[in-house]
Image 1 (tube, rainbow, N blue to C red):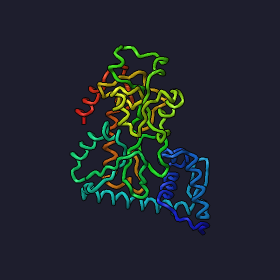
Image 2: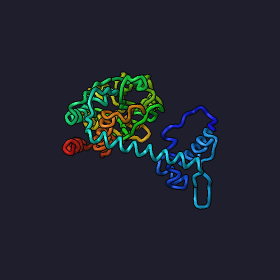
Image 3: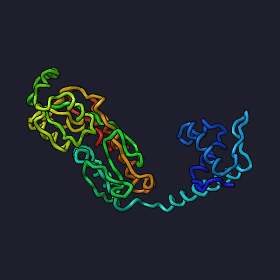
Length: 320
């Protein structure tokens, strides 16, 4: 007799079937891609909801009770039906099509993503991209966008995705102001004019670091866009922290220090759980994950000071 009004979900059946197949919780957890404690907790919740035991534990492992056997048989039938449905769709050769709304910010769009989007549209002519540019997080739950591409170490818990690279940040100055091959001393840098993002960007480690270490009167220029920050440094207004994928591709800039791991942020490709199996969303995310991985040396700042990564970009484009 069911003790709870909470309905069973397909994931509950998958879990019970995995335990029956593997006869041990650790092996079932590995097959499902979760940890042992999660499987143990969910099994207890399912048994409590149903009001019956589904497994007996013996020396040989977990053995299904009669109730468990019924649930396992149903799970097997549903699994077969899902497999048959997938084969049917594959046989119909359904092509991803339609509009895809993508939210990101201006610096990622201009300095990293636009060439990737061009290649994607070339390969998928039936998909249209609608770009939403801004630094405010789009509400994917309300369908403000289908996909969000963000630099953050704390993506919303309501979204799922993958992080194909970690964005490195380093200190840059105008190349003409630093003609020597060796980096200037830290003491001399503190005395220079600095450029910073505004207070609304305190979620970025680089902004918090600069606020802690640079005297306020030395910060002569603030703005609310990373793209403008790079332009200001290149114009010689001051020195400042930039993502390496921006600073390393501009001949007019030079690194003044190696990337600081504490200033890095993950690059996330995010979507809502309800959209992850949508053909155009899945195709787009899979494509971007592969293409961004090709550019990891650029994004993660993997080069000595003074060397350009333009060859790395060219190689990545040739391999596309």
